[in-house]
Amino acid sequence: MLRRVYALLDRLSPRDRLVFVLRRAEAMTVEEIARVMNLSVSTVKRSMTHASNQLVRWMRADPELAELLPKLERREAE
Image (cartoon, rainbow, N blue to C red; front, side, top):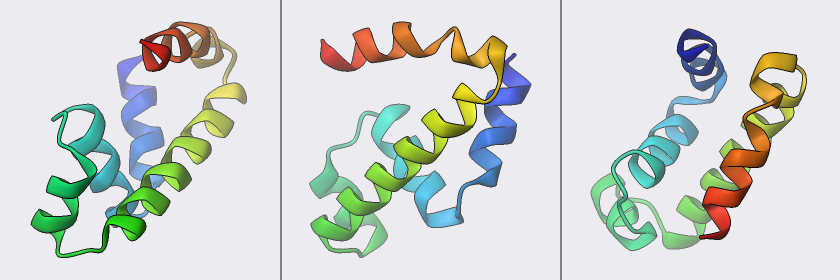
């Protein structure tokens, strides 16, 4: 299953993938990501939104990965 998640991440644009990984895996703030990547805060937010929406759409298309979505949504709310 993890390979499938990595495959989805690989489908993102390099910028969207890096923004997503820095935010979710490295727990960096939007401001930190903007500074490190030399982007505006609004660009980082747009990239994060785009990456999240794409990943959710692709995960919904995969029955096994779709089962993870409720858990991820609960985690997001916390």
